[in-house]
Amino acid sequence: MKSKNNLKKREARKGFAISSIYIVYAAIFWGYPFVWLFILAFSKWKYIGTPKFYGLNNFIKVFTDPIFWQSFSNVMNFMIYFIPLVLISSLLFAMGMKRLKYGKTFVGLAFLLANISSGVAYSIMFSKLFSENGPLNQLIDKLFGVKIPWFTNPQFALFSIVLIVLWKFIGYYGLILYSGLNGIPREIYEAAKIDGATKWESFRYITLPLLNPSIVMILVLSITLSFGIFTEPYMITGGGPMRSTLTPMMLMYTTAFNKMNPTYSATMSIIIAIISFGIIWLTRKIIERDVSLT
Image 1: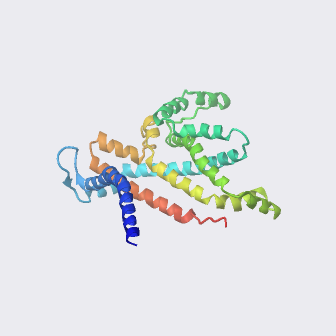
Image 2: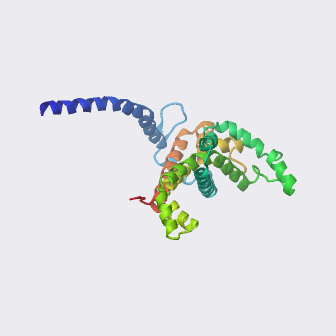
């Protein structure tokens, strides 16, 4: 009995020794920045000297800042466009992958390549493609006699950013749904067919409910992405026109480094994190369901 207890203690020490590496890493690279973030949020500091206690003034300024709320409104508009489009496109991609007999790996990797591409590189590429005299507008002009103001009209500018981000994530999100489709037993569809269910009824009452975990995962990733988007609008539109593509991440960046006000930027990041967490929690509460195949 004693030797058994000694063995458990040795195993516990080994486990702690192994996990202590991650604990130290988390304390340095996660714990310290979080503590410093909250210190900044209640301070006034311009990178020089010691931060001075500022109370709730930073939070009051954020809540009364129209530019901050415009950036938040832009994120909500972005999600209104992006989430339905990415769900439908990813689902079509997954269902197409399911029907492929040959070349699934090639098609999957081809679409996934967009996800790992450099944000700066493809932003430059799309800025040329969508420009006023770019190849896309030249084609539309020849076919329909009009040119679309992709980056000069506020709503078109935001929609253009949505299309670019959509191009990047269709493959990634589609593969998530594809793995979910592969997890649905074929026997369920066969039983439904015997009972006289149509393809639409099978899709509505079998596929969609059993894909709920994958759909919820994509929704969570899409909401997180929407609040964290930076590279595409920063590189292509710079937040314009009329701040229609200004995102919270861009506002935080310019506030912290261009306006030299890191404490105000830290406060905005905390508020945005709380809002995004609340939206994700509410989304999961409304949409997420327990799925069981037994």
